[in-house]
Image 1 (cartoon, helix red, strand yellow):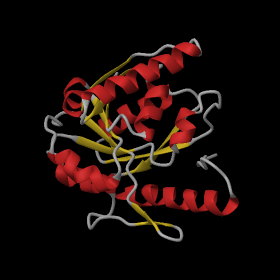
Image 2 (spheres, helix red, strand yellow; image 1 turned 90 degrees about the vertical axis):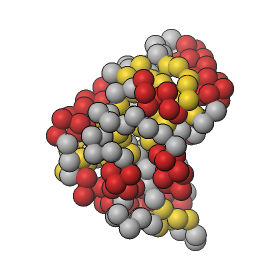
Image 3 (cartoon, one colour; image 1 turned 60 degrees about the horizontal axis):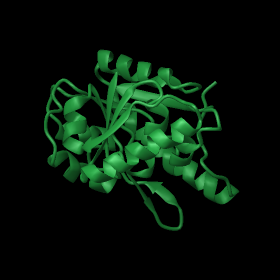
Image 4 (cartoon, one colour; image 1 turned 60 degrees about the vertical axis):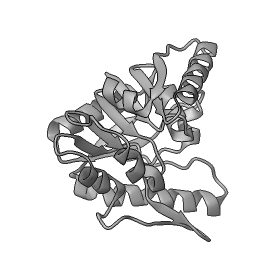
Length: 216
């Protein structure tokens, strides 16, 4: 499948590209196409050095949306609404939100919008013909980028569109050692997003890095 990553030059976007581009075509998007191309080149170099395949290109955020069937919104929550307002063409796309609205003070805590979650905000902001799913929320950028460390993570997938959820579950399952779990409708997404500040607090107080979750 063709996977566009909006905000693909951030830590999460670049990390996701390293894993996903080994099995799918990835279009890294950015507000600055030059940065996206540089990130794509870095992805190719990192995977080539390990003898791993890579199908990745850099483009604008809009072209990443236009060229892909699955669009991942790898942007910080505070940039989510303005980023979506600057883009069009989401009709008929499967849109994946790994976004977690949270605030850091003395500790991390979940700070959802009035809609209840970032994914539900995306659902409100996008046209009705876009199918929105929650996925990949609880994987740290460092885990995506640690290519020598096999995944042991589980991914909770939420969505109201059965066909779109199946596509996202297929995407999750195509990444070696990553396990997808159907967590229910998009209304469950607040619970999924709230796990990430919990993981960050555990990492902070236990002096751990890149804490993840696994269902068994």
